[in-house]
Image (tube, rainbow, N blue to C red; front, top):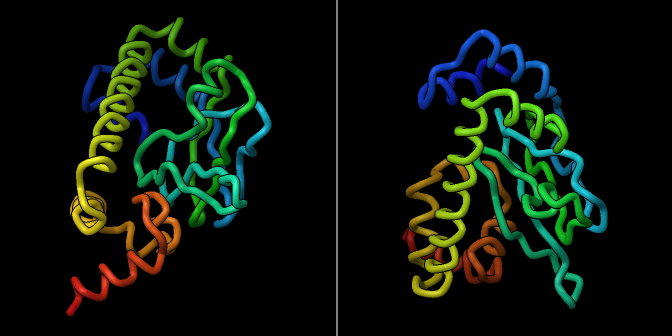
Length: 191
């Protein structure tokens, strides 16, 4: 599993043998079954996860007790309740495996060790953080400016595999609509 992450990193920067050894020492490979909540709201997130294979989501419960999906992670990529992980404060959302998942996980102390001992990983983590900020800004803009159908079309253009692996209710929640509305959109698009 480490080779998958190392390959992605090496496409952007050159890795030394020491960088590779440090990565392998800091990231722990784990397997989780589908529907497993790996980080619970009300607790301090223990890990930042790199998704090698599978789909994960961030979700919380609204005032009515309904689940609200705020992020769906398609492989590859990193996922956690990020600000709470970095600040080591109690999260207000859950991290769940939607499908069976192959993951690499890293603790906050090991992330700090990795970025302090390797300039390559420090630069890479800054790049990941910048991509995350850009993604979240773009997502906020899309939720405010695109119609529900436009948001769905854009999602399946960018992540076509999502419709085969992620339940409709999670996709609908992520796109800011009810599952019934998404079902109508999908029916219209397929007719």
